[in-house]
Image 1 (cartoon, helix red, strand yellow):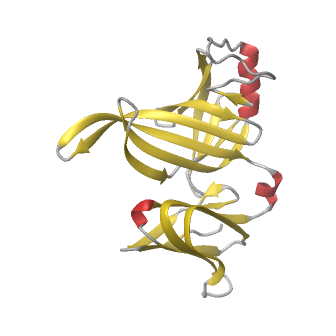
Image 2 (cartoon, helix red, strand yellow; image 1 turned 30 degrees about the vertical axis):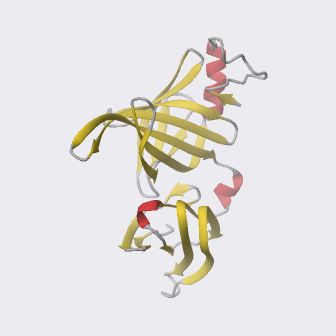
Length: 252
């Protein structure tokens, strides 16, 4: 496992000293990075210059990423949208950095926190202006991104997965509508008055639509839908204490 806070290359190195990563080390890291990374999440906070949290934006959209082991990366925003970009690994004071450049030449620099055969965790920071009333406060947005390496089940499973996170109590009903056969949603999972994270997966076929109904404060609840590990996309409808998936959320 490679960790930017504590780097492992067979044994633990002293984090109190500057760690030197050789070109061979970086090649090994690049080899570990190569492949398709799925089920992306991005837990974002707004922090002041001292690191104090000013706002918690919760989980926001993030792309799946496929690294070719050279310098090319494909970013899967959702099942219908992908972009070809480039990436470069670098190191400074023993920390590993991943620079991803999009086709429009914009980019983001991540610090690699964890890289194993199964898990990739990244963190990035961007300048941000936070307003307390009408007063602007210098701040930064901090994104904690997590992905999972593709495995054989992701290739053959044809699974739809729902992931929900909330610090408040909520209830969730998960349905599937077999649009090619009928138009009546079928309940496949339900949980009542839960807190924290909820994860559920079920097999699906082409034309199936994911329908999710969540009872709780929409401003405190984050939702992801995936098919074969890639982000799904669609619309929502919102009420005072409820939100639902509506158009979209289809299995291709």
